[in-house]
Image (cartoon, rainbow over all chains, first blue to last red):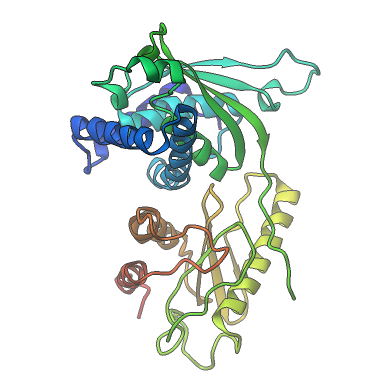
Length: 202
Length: 151
């Protein structure tokens, strides 16, 4: 039974409203900002900072998915397109109270088989607002150094999707903090994962 | 008694309803004789193996969305709740009990979420050791004891 876009929207809103433990947005933004600043001081290399943010996000994501699954009671998504809808309308909404727009795209079909489950299928999330970057303005050297300020989000998406058997590549395409038109994250499916079977020792 | 850690090399976690086997195993049947003579982690591995085999067989037969829910023998019933993320919650009861899947789901959304998922210092991967900590045990214990099916 495919869940419609509207249903996802409703679920996302319900979960957000039902959350009793919300955090002050400013505190959240300032805490994250302090984290990024500390990383910049520690690593002094913006590419490395990007990597560390992604890694942190990954660890967060592997746990966040449990919260998501426990509360949303959502079943398995029918295809990768469905995943994009769920991520935007339920995931982002229930945790950050924002709903990015989803743009689906896929490789030009090389075969008539189901396009939305092919490796290489992707979707792009366009964030109109970004609670992490509320008060932020990037200095010259961060812009030149290639810092993706909110890169933790890429890690969160990668980590959480990996726990539900999808290996994805997540990258920022653009960021208003860098002077771009919009803030966009691309999520590309690499492959579906098989559950690991333990190596028998008996 | 301290629980043996799981020595499994699996990347998939088995969260077994963890109560110290002596003195009070959480099985609702009379304690005529222990469930098995095996140490806990060996038992857990066997249980995991059974569940995985059954589940794979069922999926081959009926498709990916089919859920293996429980099995029953002449002496006990094994209930399984598996999350989309691959965590498996298992409970054993006497064979007359109705489905306890809702309990397992409650454990997932309650104690597991609170004391394992939200504790950054608790490993979520049972590669090295099983998932086990004080608060998780205590909270699960409270939850199960509060059930009507529990004597």
